[in-house]
Image 1 (cartoon, helix red, strand yellow):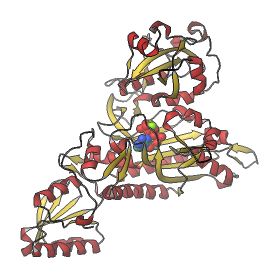
Image 2 (tube, protein in one colour; image 1 turned 180 degrees about the horizontal axis):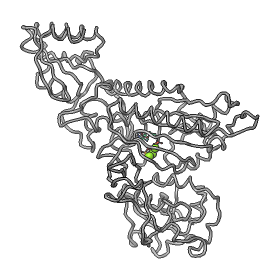
Image 3 (cartoon, protein in one colour; image 1 turned 45 degrees about the horizontal axis):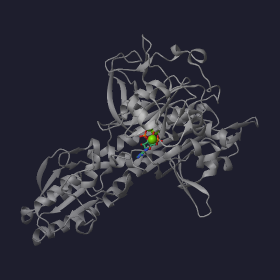
Image 4 (cartoon, protein in one colour; image 1 turned 60 degrees about the horizontal axis):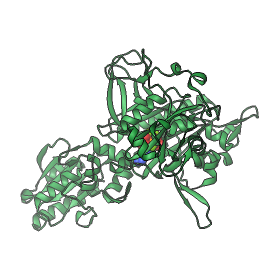
Length: 560
Ligand code: ATP
Ligand code: MG
Ligand code: MG
Ligand code: MG
């Protein structure tokens, strides 16, 4: 590719609104353009990297026998209503209507769609197991899209769904996906860690997140310094000796001010299948008030709340703020049954899982009495594990690290197949709901994670496997006939040997070319300069900075 005609709008200055390195560097290296908050155009250089990552994913998925398909991004609401997620998803689901006023959503994930396909085409256990995947744009109206491709509202995901008759078969596929993910992330050059994660809403059990290690990561990993133990801190709760006084189960609910509603109304609107909402309180998230419903049916909720609060820089609202926002005295915002001015449109992400995850429907939340209806002590004694404490597996000491969730594998169980009626006849002719697993990789997020791990003060340092081109060929003075001739020759030669070459043939100064070259970060740089007349060029490795002068015959030999 000749750089003179390549759309590569590099920037000198660091864009002021980009906080993290990957975002800054992708903008500076002319890889993407923001079109709306959390929505980006991937320019040609980025597109090449994305394709490479996709191909690594595709190769590793295909090796396991998974089959690629493409599902629609436009989902009819009826499918989402079958599982109840049309209501449960809240604001993250982008909804729209067609000209006939029919409701649709832009797919944030595809369990409903894939289950509708499998239930129609697979009736016998003989057709199972099967794993179907796609690589596609997903839509989520994140409440805080940020950090460029790390948290977009439109992003590329590989999502796979597996279907089984036995739990042994699901276990096997889970392991196969776990291994495939390890291969993918190793191949694209990431330093990563699989961690035990929270299965929350989906009713499944086993789940692991794949975390790319990076300081900007939004997740905290608690890991042992001398064993394989590693967990998302949400899952690393430990018992405390002294029961905490703020020991309560919680649910976060986003509220807006303005309309008077009872907490009961909010709860029923949310379709929270809550066992016992026993208290409510308000906290402030950014500039929004958040209502916290406290309930008693999930052991880890308090721990999760604390983490969610810390991670999102949330603090408890003062009495004065409560009064100002809610228009009633703080003391009146409390037990269930109190009238407060709230409109809850969706559960905040941090707690979305537990909103869906409660398992007993409307058991008794009205008029619940803490002392009578639940025991504080049964869940009062959980807190986050701390750095330096013994690891829960008894081996070594806990350390903390920040991670970017680049993938997740998940045993779903039968939640979708049961609610959508996807079953097969087993060996004995008996109808059984299909067991499912789902497996996601954030492809565009992975690209950003790679940059977070591979850069220096001058720019990106692409790992070879995902580099947009392997070689950056620079004609230092493209007006010099000898240099141009030699560079042209190398360009043709290298390409004929199968290398992907970006050829900087622009009439720019040497300084500009070198700067852009470091910024773009291709693994190998070949500069054709003053010594072209002697048939000598300069070769530089972007990663090590190692630089050597080589004669053309040597290059020819090297690549033959
Ligand atoms: P997060 O906790 O970061 O919000 P998630 O757990 O909601 O992610 P999943 O539903 O597990 O995401 O989706 C599978 C993968 O898709 C994630 O592991 C992540 O790599 C990627 N992903 C999810 N949300 C986004 C986003 N807003 N932007 C870019 N990639 C995303
Ligand atoms: Mg999310
Ligand atoms: Mg997550
Ligand atoms: Mg996830």
